[in-house]
Length: 361
Length: 250
Image (cartoon, rainbow over all chains, first blue to last red):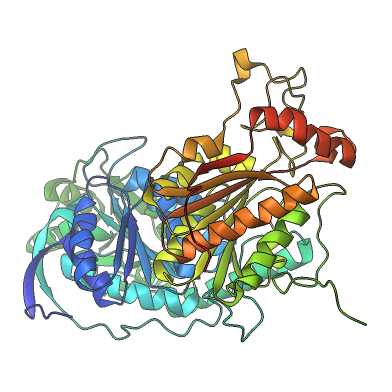
């Protein structure tokens, strides 16, 4: 593989594509949709030079089913899209979960519902973390907040997918996809796909046939299969929770925010500190499994008056925050929609209202 | 005593679940025999679809994937792009392929995917108990066209083979039936040719097999065979629509 400089300026969408290639992904299936199409452009050029496959599918539905086939054949495989396209892929998500196929999907999210708009939003949190397709299943969901983290989490997503045989969804947004930031090219830990004895690669006349399926007509077998899946999800929930926790100790207000929103909140925290208000931040890096323990621990700090969840939606992650806090402290919400971003000033006002309810200092 | 007939190595020793008089079993056997005879079984990956053949992945002795409704050609594309030397096929019915999966089959053919599709057309949805299919004949009674398919409100049957034959990526397209010994032999020849076209990397190959559904047609197995030979063949004439001149025999 040709070497890139140790540190380069990259667009978020390009970082996703390059990271996938560095993680050993040689098969990419996609369909054009704004604001993530640069990933396809990059893959179309780059896959040729690394001997991989770029295929522009006829639809999002076809693309995710190509991922199903390729993952079942043992490959490290990825598809990417944006919100309306991710909705179309939900059928495939459910089948991939049922058939336990490792793969990586990136949602460079935009605003909805419907065709909505092309600006960034986080209105896909429910879809990403609570299902979207039918049946009892989970996807591991990663939420990067910088181009560097997009790169790193994309590499790690392939390992995570292979380790648990799950779909790993990276929930980014249009801001992260379009922004340029320096990226250090960390070499992936595991560039080759792990052994996959279950894959359908041809029996070679040496073993009984392998089958990839999500159908179990016999209810006892299907319940057993579901219990197996749930045990696997429980293991992921035990082992893979990740979050960034900053300044929670002694904070008066703890803000929860992920992705792009967390970047805005970081600036607000500095501004609040200048006013003498100590604000902590919990930034979930895994949206599922959700860092409930970290949130609960933050809420338990005697100094914390309330939590404030800031999101680019009408209040989605805040439900998980409330479940974690479980009534220990008030949980407030501040959100913007339609591609609008909250200003630092409006977030600061919400923080002031919690920390200085009388308006005094 | 001389062994004159045995189960093909391409099928596992499990009972089929198909109804009496259904010709799926014959088509399965033909596909399996061809894979064995050409020495392709060990490197083959099949894709089951949704409908009566949803679990034929348990019947074929090669590696198998089960696909969502209509998506088998996309799944097969994914497999083939990972394993270009493998022999990859889909086995799909008419509801799966010609309704919900129309986009996937058309584009797999248009791309000239080096895969083979065996398309079993019995002019009805079998598994879900006899609803009108895109291939249902005008006037044909089904559970969702109880007064007979009315062209004015329910449209016309789709001749998939003729449609796919217009695409450059589809290099071999033939329609056969399995209602007689002669027909079965011709069907096997077509399936063999389709797999050889794939092995030669020429493009997409497609065999449509006119098949029976006595249960949902409300006919006896023998009457069903006759109905294929008469009413169905009138709408769906047998023949090679593309690639008649291809020489692929080794």
